Structure formats: structure tokens, C-alpha cells
Image 1 (cartoon, rainbow, N blue to C red):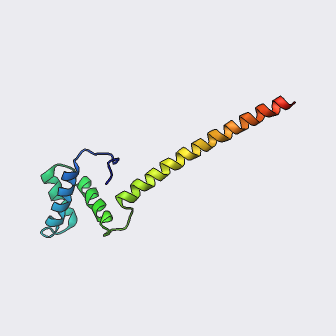
Image 2: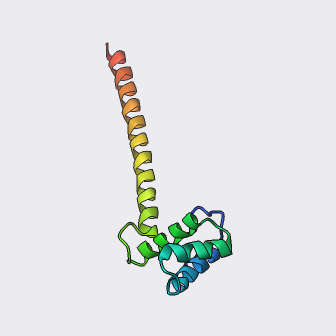
Image 3: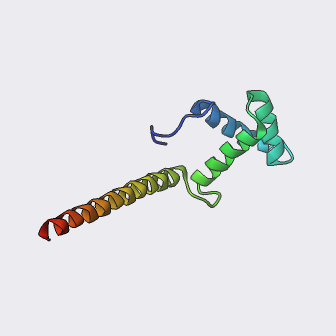
Length: 108
């Protein structure tokens, strides 16, 4: 993950530990949700938060379909750049129209 990533309430080390604990607890529990709930109770975040961490790890590892963390960050960066370029284009169009009108007025 890049340094640009927004830091959440929990440190990365805790997220990684929680995911490892879920994978280990999954063997002893009846379901993944049971393992997630157990780990969440031990570490403090909500079960839904831990579930999201597990899903993100599964996607990043290629075990589940979806955009990886790096792909999501790249997509966000490209969308931001696209917005900036569209905004710059609009400014240039307005400036071009303004100067064209100025030049046209001077020729008369």
C-alpha cells in the first residue's frame, strides 16, 4: 500500500493481525463469520470492520474478484487527474472565447 492511503482508526499492524487471526480461527469455528466475530470481540473493532479487512485481503491476494488496493488507488488518481484536466479544458475554452470576442471587437 502506498503512503498516500488514508489512515483509519486502527493501525495497519492490527489489521494484518486481525486477518491472520481470522484465518487461523476459521479452522476451529463453524463459519468465517463466527471466526470474524470472535476476533473482533478480542481486538475491539466491530465484526463488520474485521470482515471488510478480510475481504480486502482476499481481493488483494486474488482469492476473490474485485479491484485490488493498488488498482483502486490508481483508479482514484486517474479520476482525479481527469477532473483536473476537464476543469483546465473548460478554463481554456472560456479564455479562448473571451479573447476571440476581444479581437473581434477590435477589428470593427
